[in-house]
Image (cartoon, rainbow, N blue to C red; front, side, top):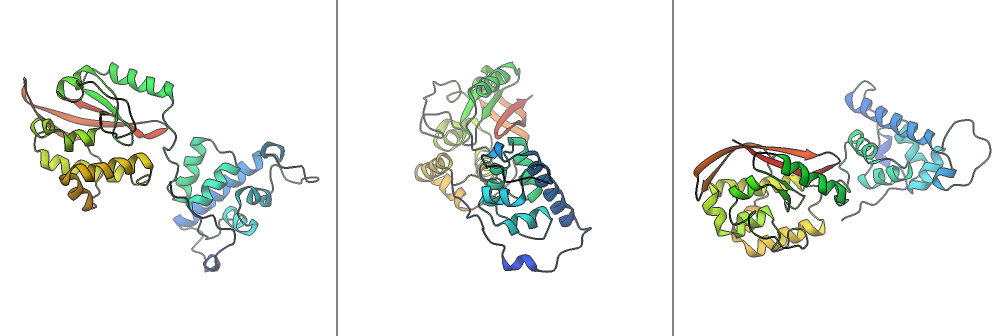
Length: 290
């Protein structure tokens, strides 16, 4: 994953005329500063491995101590807490989140306040217990359902989904890396399995859309090794995918009608609905409702 250099000195542009204190940007900066100050005041030097430095008139860490832990200049960090109109990179925010010992939810809130995308969003693998919960949830759904990870590898599917996706979900799977040949990957199925062209109604339109949806969903981690390996392999193995990927189309994932030419049931239609897993927004549950 690419890292963003952390600034150690305030930029010259930080001294330009501030916006109105009543603007939305100003309120957002105040909320960010208040959040950082509150969490700084909750920590003690001992909690972050710093030696005590004399008597303290205020609770928690000093601003310069947080700046030291982050690798930022004290002036820069102070300006952020003071809601000054300065720019802060995602890398610097990540360092602040680490220094303040923020939880997953607190870290996500910090990045939302700053209007930045967390470079580590969804980077942690799905814990074993969460994987088991996803499998149990999919199995409990009566309608055709399956769960996908960030590479659109299938984490779980039920019998109703296997009945729809003949030759894919009903076939034995092979363990391996994300998106690897042999794993049950939705993109590999659509572009490399001839059966998909027969099964999926209006295959060309659907193929174009899923490529644009995948690019939009993976915008935060297109340089992650598994995602890059998948897209590189598909560009080599599928001229259609390569052409569509090069067009740089981006669309939001939507539900709606999904039609199939089922080998036994004939033409069948569903309404697709997608939900995200709390705490792991790169994992999604897809249901096909009659």
